[in-house]
Amino acid sequence: MKKNPETIFGKEYYEACYRDYARQNPPGKLAFYKSIVESTAAGGPGFRLLDVGCAFGLFLSCVNPAWKRYGADVSEFAIRQAASRCPEARFFAADVAALPCKQSFDVIVAFDILEHVRDMDSAAIAIKSRLCAMGCFIFVVPVYDGPTGPLIKLLDHDATHIHRMPRTWWLQWAARHFTLYQWWGMYRYLLPGNIYVHLPTKTFRNFTPAIAVAVKNK
Image (cartoon, rainbow, N blue to C red; front, side):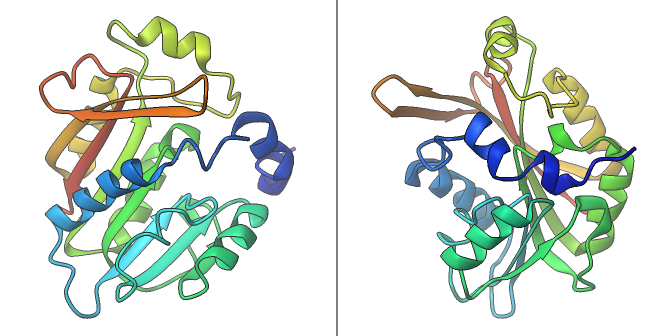
């Protein structure tokens, strides 16, 4: 029997897997995500941004308030926190493959979400159907190859991670459904003393424990 997403991704899930969620998403990291959005889209009047898997709304709360902001997450618990943090945005409790909104978006982002999604082709179809003709999709995923692969596998205690794949798998998936625009590697970890390390790089992107990918709608 299929489990209710709220049972899987409710309060207990965040307390068990991401009790340091805010510390794992410091201003510098969110600013890097914002810079990707701003470098790939014009962001003029009427600019629409959808954050898929928005969790507590941290990213939506730090971007341009003039943008039309939307957030979706399977967790109603997370959506309640997001709506409280960012009341100007519109939120949906929904899976990426079943978004109830009919609007088209200039940019859709999914930060550390796709590794949880079982049907990746359905997710791609849903995202493409919501993007404008020249819209951009930006996603971040952990990767389990390279010199950091064994360490990432050891430290990953999230049983809901379905896709524990190498970076080539994600880049090939992106290229099948979209036009690959650019991608970065990211070193990131919450160290003892609540010090969060976040270092994006293109030079060493083949060796990092996570990647950020920007693609355009075909």
